[in-house]
Image (cartoon, rainbow over all chains, first blue to last red):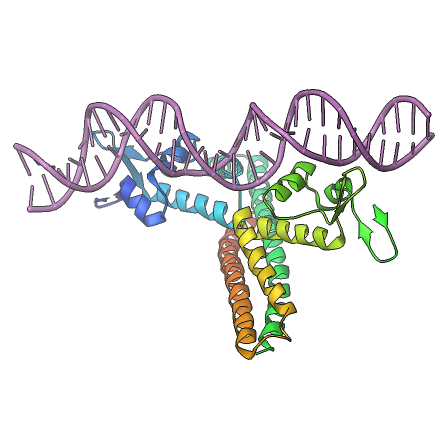
Length: 141
Length: 141
DNA sequence: ACGAATCTTTACGTCAACGTATAGTTTCCG
DNA sequence: CGGAAACTATACGTTGACGTAAAGATTCGT
């Protein structure tokens, strides 16, 4: 872990311990274009800044909580990056372009939100049935 | 689909259409001991009764909503069947045996419930962050 | 400065959860 | 009753998401 005045850099080991994945996972995600080390040491060792670590944490969240495949995650990230890039040029873009960016952003986020809500609803149904059965059994003792 | 006075039997095609899985999945789940056709036609074609279809629907629920592997699902089902079998002999069993059955049931169901709650909480956190970002973007238009 | 720990690239291995192909059989429908 | 559609068993293939091994290079602690 390299801490300078304006940034902190994490080694592979740091990230592994921080996020509970293996080094192989870092390499694999890099292979398939999900993450890229923000820099390397002079000897070639990978270094990750906070942004990359955050991105990886986000990837793991979507993967574990929503059950997205890495391919689906890549689509989501790509869309978000497109929107981010567009947002950078937001000020200098025309009214129509701005509207387009905003609408696309909203659509993407709404889609994901829909998946989350759908999943939560299904979980809630399972939960309901389970709690019911649990109460019935508990009343036996 | 064979409907008699006291039961309804489903063919492979029926189940496939009803639950949105492929025939291969039915065969595979049978291979790994998750389900068994309740009977066969004279020619050897599989027939499933409502119980098996319900069980399969339950399997798919756990799989898709909780992200359990088939192995984990088999453990859950096996535990539940053990408890069911015990529950059959509930009346004729001793006080200690009954208590054991009840406690084991409660533990299993509580574990699953914990997984559900955990997952829902994580989803809720994701949801919160997403809604926040969505509101910020929406305020732009 | 040196040994242990960590890292690199490359490449083959693995495992779950099915997909797909084949060849023959059974069931359904006009 | 005859052909299309669905089914059977068997078996090899595929895909995603990593695991594991090897051989050498780099970094870190004392």
